[in-house]
Amino acid sequence: MPKMGESVHEATIIKWLKNEGDSIELDEPVLEIATDKVDSEIPSPVAGILGKKLFNDGDVIQVGSTIAVINTAGEGGAVAEVAAAPAVAAVEATVSTAAEVASPAVVAEVGDSPSGRFYSPLVKSIAKQENIGIDELEGIAGTGKDGRVTKDDIMAYLPNRGKNGAPAAIPQVQPQPQSKPQAQPAVQIQAPAVSLQGGDEIIEMDRMGKLIAEHMVMSKHVSPHVTSFVEADVTNIVMWRDRIKKEFEKREGEKITFTPIFIEAVCKAIKDFPMINISVDGTNIIIRKNINIGMATALPNGNLIVPVIKNVDRMNLVGITKAVNDLANRARNNKLTPDDISGGTYTLTNVGSFGNVMGTPIINQPQVAIMAVGAVRKKPAVIETPTGDAIAIRHMMFLSHSYDHRVVNGALGGQFVRRVADYLEQFDFNREF
Image (tube, rainbow, N blue to C red):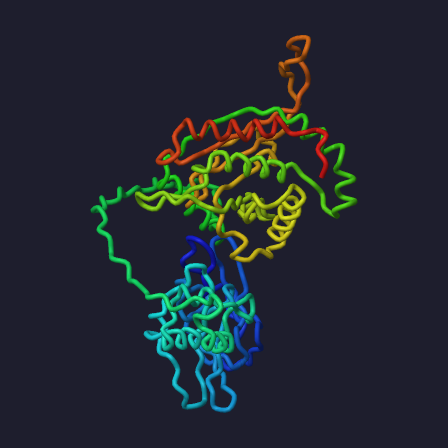
């Protein structure tokens, strides 16, 4: 079972697409799995025969577990390499030759990749024999699918090891276990009993609905939520978009919505207040280097999913717009991959798309904050002019910022949402794109 993103530790098998004894081509889908809110097909990393399915439909499998055995033979008596990209399942190879295959115990000694990069059992076995640690293995350029390291890559690396700047072997140091404070017994919370009345209908939550419910309850249990509100004048943004949207679509082939502009403002504010872009691990605070902003997207069935735009701070407004449109379209067509919904460091949700003026969003763990943007409405507002204050019709909207009060105090949480509003209000009407 492949690694499918941060904080994703298991997946559910929806259905097998192949039966035992069926022939399988390289990269042909073998089964469908479901993770937190996204379904994916798992392709085969090799061609062969499906020898044995180790789990059934509906089983919940831990990441890293072997889920199937594919029978494949090597050429000239050699063991065929079983390799896989990060988005495919780890598969054991059963070979028809007498060649030695690394045992699971030997493979496990090499360790897991901190970057999530997948290494086949054969590559791990060679690395162990040559005393190549995981840090050195991470530095080897791969020519396989999605940049994975193949047998040929590691064999070609060995003669030049330590030369031309190639990394030398790095001793593997086992971290010493740290003592943790004694955990207090969790308080057991019982849901109230529900009585049925005449005419009531009972329907079961769908799979995604159950996952969302569990995630929301977990988030409220983990983080003490506080929400701050700011009203922003976004008249310049509305007028600018109305002015350029036709030309933008003609030139870029994309429609521009308000969402990319909101995401850009959030990104700028995160640069000003990096302690919003963090996670909590026990008593440690993890300050995220990358700014990866998730955007809550409504699906046709009414559920929400949060695809993530990676490294927003490296994009201009056109790039953000293209990323937003691409992820939104693939979300609505159930084409997202596990990687598309992983790695987020901050989340934006647009409750205004439902006609709501504000909301109190629940934090998307393991992040520490989330912002909801409300509907843009025309309202009379007091504005400052060179000749004095005046009342004018302006486009106004509310920003709601929920944050984890364990690590984000009211000052930081309030200043952050105010800074986002400032960037929106200071938007240049004459801006070029």
